[in-house]
Length: 232
Length: 236
Image (cartoon, rainbow over all chains, first blue to last red):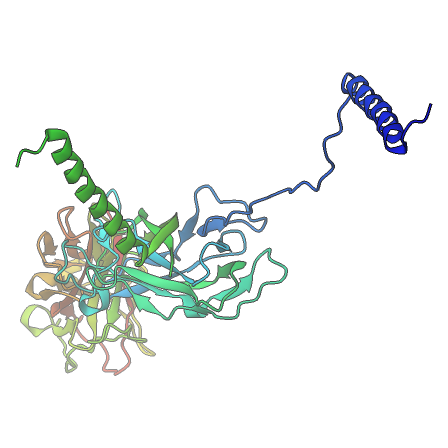
């Protein structure tokens, strides 16, 4: 019997198709391979927190940082007691983990503008400008005394950041607290050109406190001063 | 037009929300406070040293303070009372200066004494005494030496004033009374007493303390008689 070639192929094709369908049905009971593709792994690095702190030489926060001014002797003339803010074991530590690319400013202020050097005896002021702190001026309290801060005398250095420099970071100039006028004093300014990722250490900020005449002897004068950092 | 309450509130909420957003945007363009750290600054004022000294008008210590008594002419009789040699202890440039820099809150006493109870008006010739009570200094009494002579000190006629302390007063500070040195019984004479009510922090100056010295009869003429007297201050 003669079978046309086309019919022959069709029949052969049907066999092949049937075999294929049979294989597919058989394999589907085992495993299906759908596709092989490239997976996209994503990761976000968030900016850290811009901060200023007092740390030790290992960059561990100091729990209760202190500054002890040199003792003076009670006298009848106005005098000055001096000290240093920022030492090798109590470092003023500024950290900018890509949080303030436009720069930042570190300032020092009293815990309040009405803060005083507290004592069990007679308190004394830190921001009275009258006679350079030697007499009580027109501020809110009746106490004398004025604190002068001179960051320019300090030493600035990069911290843990191995690639950072101190470029575009400037120390503030000497200034004295005046209630209502100079309530905070700039210690450091990071310009926009400073490292976006960086940390810095400041030590040796000179502190000078006017001690008024006839101030009573006591060993318990103290005041809290607060560091803060502001992004530009 | 009637407007439902919910629609009204929704519009108000939108205004409030817009306000908050606007304020937030405004603030973010000013400053951000990220962190702060507080340090405790501590200060000690030590009490100074309670002291008495002889200073000039600038309160500078006088290296070798001196008192020049009035010269007397040789006499065969005792020069006592109104005839005695006189002087003034505490002058404009040699102030008796007391300083209490919070060192003696309960008060203090300033006294004058001879450099020793056996001290005398020394001379290359014949010495004489400053603390012999025999006949008011006109004769040698029962003390350790064989010289006559007696010194009387009268602080009550002096002038007391505050020193460099601007807020101090002479309240509760009193001058002593006139007294004469007597070996073993009055070896020191009180010039000033600061009671407990006097300024805890204060300084004072005393001038014009009257000094009178009885000179025994027939004391040889000489220009080198001198004796050292010492000021001291004691806290109460």
